[in-house]
Length: 430
Image 1 (cartoon, rainbow, N blue to C red):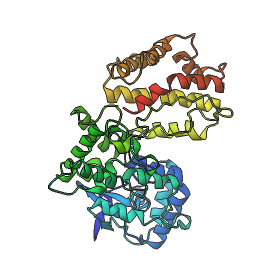
Image 2: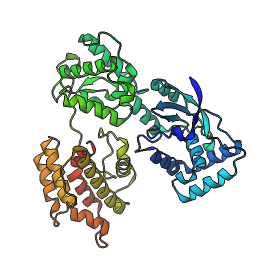
Image 3: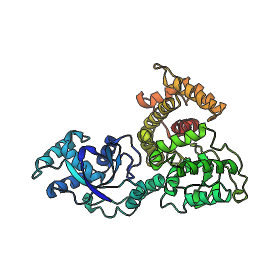
Image 4: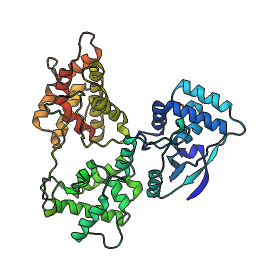
């Protein structure tokens, strides 16, 4: 551990803080703190100004010429906005920080002492032992269940049996362990920290039980390649620190033909029902209160999809179909358009700038079909999306937003979602 003075301008508010999961950049992270914890942030700012210092060193790690803040993001944000009030997300908050800055006694610090750690696994161990007691926002804020889950998903820590141990055991039995160096288990746990990433290499740890979900021989070969890349330091922790890094590495293995295709596991210990059915965002014929069924769809949410993620959660957990049909109708249109634009950009689908929504959706659908992601029946639904006389159409979505005489019903909304759900799911996975 080293304590060093670091310039405020060199400190970066963590866009992947476990409080909120991955966001697009540090500006979005600052905005989140005030959207969710404005009273706490104001209280903390007043306390810092009154005391003229912060009592706990922020925990940071070097990243090129900057330092990412892993603990102390609220304190660092308060100091940054006191130094530059114009960075506050609203004019009201900008005035608040200007007023607080005027109350500062003595010279305002342009550098602050920080605990600098270069080993990010050590950082996670430190984080795992912190966060108790909020003191109305002055002390460290306690993580709620969702924040703890985000930490586990990001790091693979605290989620039951060690996946790395299970993988190492099976590689040893198959005589596929790297010969020269040990596998860095923390890095392996981080890469395969969530089910969407595990499924790509053909394994699962649902309910704390290791299973092969694809052909076991091919999955073991993929795991051996991953273990070798990590043991030889071809792949290091910094390469897979966020969701995009994990996906980029797995995409590379897929292009090289390393990852398994779907198939039945052949190793006796995995002979239980193996292949995981393809998740569907459609609802089964049961009563539901929200547009999106409340189940796990194995979606990962990189920072660029922060708004998509929030809208998805509102539609899945917060907005009741019977009481909020108007809000849902607008949000589902927004989600469809955002998911479509994400797929067009990430999959490099050829579209024209003046293409309308229905045309772009059809082109994306044909691209998804060619990639084996959806079938001909789903493409046919998208082709009919241009027809204004259909319930599931671009015209209906437009009326949800612009028509004063068109009232969305829960039944209509469910019909639209169930027709397009699997397509939206695939577009978000791009």
